[in-house]
Image (cartoon, rainbow, N blue to C red):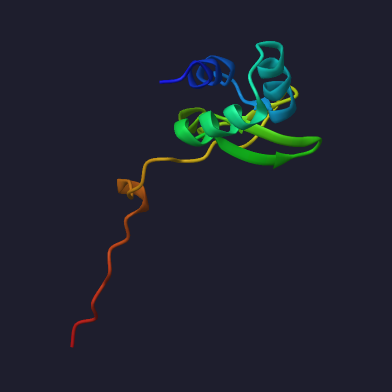
Amino acid sequence: MSTMENELRELLKEPMMAERVFEHAKNLGISERTVKIAKKNIGVITTKVAGGWQWSLPQAAACRTIAGYARTPIKISGGINESQKQTRRVPRD
């Protein structure tokens, strides 16, 4: 595991704008190319938001936040719960 992969995991505990990630890497002397490779290796999720691209870790993607507001959480698990089941009635002759 590379140093940048570890840095990304730490940085992206909360979603962050890509521009800030690149600034942080530059301050550490890490190239944009290395950041992009690390991003791909750990499966960072990118989302277009007002003002640019937001990066987040896969497990943090269920409820993304940026600039103090939250989007509607995304249901990750599948299946139907008991209240959603419908019974089918078959007419009798």
